[in-house]
Image (cartoon, rainbow, N blue to C red; front, side, top):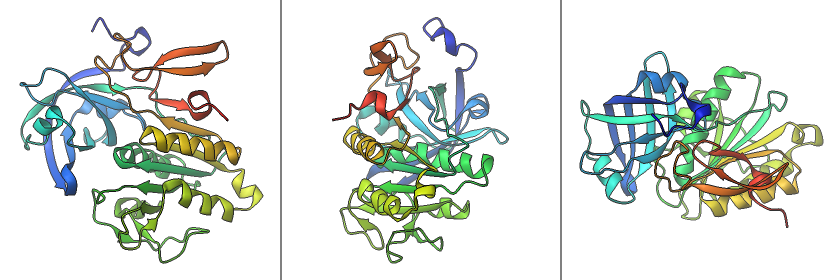
Length: 296
C-alpha cells in the first residue's frame, strides 16, 4: 500500500478476517473475535486495527486490539456503538467476513526493571490494558501488575469478587475482571454509579490509595500505563508526575487512513528537538505521558 509509512512496511497487513464470535453487553458494548492470522502474529499490547465495518460504510474504524492469539490466529476487539459505522459492525455474525488493516501503531514498552506495573483503563480504553496484562503475565512472570478499570456504564463482562489482596484498598471493594483473576493479575473496578463492590470514585483516586500504601522501595518499582478519555489521561499524567513515576499513555484520536499518510490524527508532542506534530496512528498511539501533557 503506497500510503503506509515507510518504517511500517512489512509489519502492517491487509487481511480478510472471518468473524468467529460477536457477544453483546449492556449499553451497546460488544466483544468481537475474528480470525486474522497475520495480524494476530504481529499484534502487541497497544496496537490497533483499522476495520471495514460494512460494505455500505466506506470509511474504516480504528479499534484497539484487546487480545491476540498467534497460535490460533485470532484477535479480539471490545467496542461500543458510537455512530453508523460501529452500528453496522455490531450486526456482523459468525461466518461473516470483514477486511482489517493491522496491526498498527507503536505498542507499550514495559520496563523489565520495574516489577509493579500499574495499568489504568477507562471505558473503551480498557482493551489495551487487558492485552498488556496478559502479555505481562506470560512474558514477565515475576512482575505483580495491578489493573484499575473505570466505567460509568456496566462493565462488558460479569464482575467477580477478587481473592487477590491489593494494598491500600478496602477489602470490600474487590470487584474484578474474572479473566484477569484467572491469569493471576489483580484488578479493581471503579465507577461513580455505585455498582456493587466497586470503588466509588475516579480511577486516579483508587490508584492514589494503592500508591500511598507502598513503601519507598516498592514505589520505585512502579511504572504506569493508561488508555482512556483525554481528561482521564491528563489526570493520570499528573498523578505520575506527582509521584515521579514513568508513565506511558495510549491516545484516542479520530483518524482517516490510520497508516501515516493523511496526518489527520496529529497531536503536539514535546521532543528533544522541540515541539513537533506527531501522528497518533504510527508515531503512537503510545507516547510518554510527559511529552503530551504539559506539567503545571
